[in-house]
Amino acid sequence: MSPPVFIGSALCVIGFCIFGGLYTATASEAFSGLQQSISRSFSWYYALTVTVFVVFAFWLMASPYGRLRLGPPDSRPEFRYPAWFAMLFSAGMGTGLVFWGVAEPLYHHANPLFAEGGTPEAAKEAMRYTFFHWGLHPWAIYILFGASIAYFHFRHDLPLAPRSILHPLIGRHIEGPIGHGVDILCTVGTLLGVSTSLGLGAMQINSGLAQYMDIPLQTNVQVGIIAVITLVATVSVVSGIKAGIRRLSLINMALAFGLMTFVFFAGHTIYILETLVGSLGIYIQKLPEMSLWVEYTKNTDWQATWTMFYWGWWISWSPFVGVFVARISRGRTLREFVLSVMLIPTLVTFVWLSVFGGSALHIELFGDGGLSQIVQEDVSLSLHAMLEALPLAGVTMMWATLVIVIFFITSSDSGSLVDDMVTSGGHPNPPRAQRVFWAVSEGSVAATLLIVGGLRAIQDASISLGFFMSFLLIAICLSLYKALRSERNMTRVGSHGDFRIKPWSQQPGDAGEPGP
Image (cartoon, rainbow, N blue to C red; front, side, top):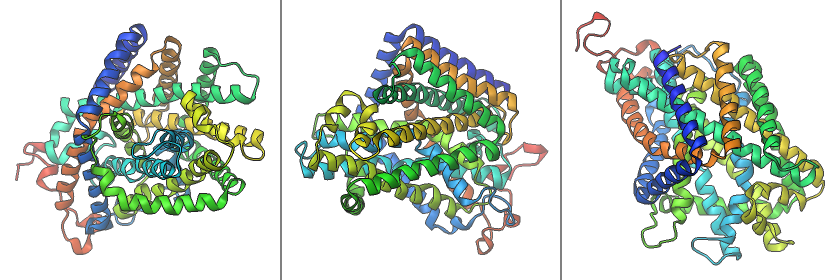
């Protein structure tokens, strides 16, 4: 265990929860105001930096450094590709994609930015911006954290912790207050993000169950849902990645893709295919414009409410997803890493959005309609409302609920493992007792804030942390570029044995050696 990081993280989380729980109104006003101020005042900054992150990720894949293997030259992947992809996709998107895959297109269709609401043109705009928010940009953000930590851990034997990514810039000082601060920031962001998602998810699951089962919409039911998810997540994280997280992720991906296949054939299949191809074409054509567009000629707060909110959310989750994906990626090349963590998940996401969002828009445009009104009233009911319009609604709604629950479990157990690894000094296989501590902590924080009504405040706080983490991501780009430039003998670039320690990785006074 790393006492400074463990104790510091625990104290910060306790402080956030006390403030959000006992002074709910004040905390909500403060954190919401901070989050809105950042989104409105720094939209230009978010638009520019996140675009740079996407460009940097493509450069990693296309450059000669893409052949570098994350580990020795003879190392091979620890997990088969299906299991690896299932784990990284479950951690990266998870439940959010299940809910917003239906809700966001419907919301944008009713309240578009550049078209008249409820029209076919609004449907095109809705899918374009939904693709944008869930496409390349979030995965590029995850790649920066994941690729850098995997590179420094597997090629340079540095701890599997966020502090390691700064080694080329500050050297041995990663073991001091700066390194502790970075690890604490990432640990707190991970726990608060997963906890608030767990609490809000319990409310969403309860809303869905109340629609078609005799289950009341009550706080004690939601606490019970959190308890069940936490229990299963604890068993999963204690069992380890191979026995627990891997199996749950594979099961969940099979269930999710099975549900998607059913909706694809039960819905209007031709319209779904047209939505996928047409929206993909518009996305590719408009990507540069959407990436750098800033709402300076309109005063609607649309960009702050949607795009900037998403960018802050994805950045705040990047330490969690990045560390976890790094942990399971030993033996992959950088090019394979970027391809599999950015391009392939983006395409899978687009298919999912086209199937569920396209089906919902078809019902709204050519069917009985009414889905947009449901989304305006309660976003958590959007998926179930769409499934009600298809055959076997009772079965598919239960199926969807099971997918949502397992997605929450995989997010919780992955988040617990990440917090445990970081607070244990970057050990890839931390003690089981600490795994239980962090898993139970996530559930306890979620249940406590749910009871006292402080979930929204803490969610705004975790998203606001994304703004400060963005500076860390900029440092990651500089650090990883500096390290890669130090790789020698590029004619044999993939050979771990060719690598030589450079000045960035050994500062004057380290290990008693003279400086360069």
